[in-house]
Length: 112
Length: 112
Image 1 (cartoon, chains in turn cyan, red):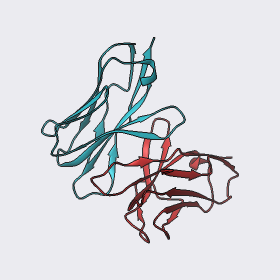
Image 2 (cartoon, one colour):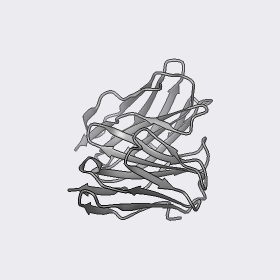
Image 3 (cartoon, chains in turn blue, orange):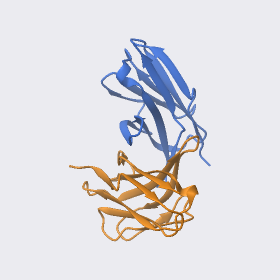
Image 4 (cartoon, chains in turn blue, green):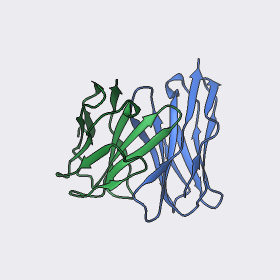
């Protein structure tokens, strides 16, 4: 059974810092991996989707990488801003499965 | 596009009452999902659908029923609400398995 772990569970950084969020998965036979952002009291917003054949995806200040062999993905946030404060979740989908497996998320606070 | 919408946004029920949560998407997506999110438990899949007229059980299906009579709608029913069903419920959809998953804004349910 696929297990997805996100460490740390919480992170607090000063504004302007570049930071990396981690997502680890136990079964490397994945089809794709998706990063989401969730603001308090809101739904999940998709940030980036990486297919298993890809190594990374970029959107603005965000860059997500995927290393299937090591069972890891990282979400890099450049020049963090207070508006980046949110919970970030990753979800992994196995080949042949309709259901993604979600991590518990990393709660990020960027303070001015 | 309105994306994924959920009705109602908030509801208070008494134990034993029934209700239906409505999820609608206007993106012609095949796959639809119902999750619940509880503090410390992360996102848990209740039921899902791989197309109009189909439904399948997820991780925590007990006490819930679903229907997908129309492609754009996915209904989640609680026949006899229990306090343990107090949660935030999210609906999600995706066009294909290689595509981005989109989430609705959530329904907050309180069962007294």
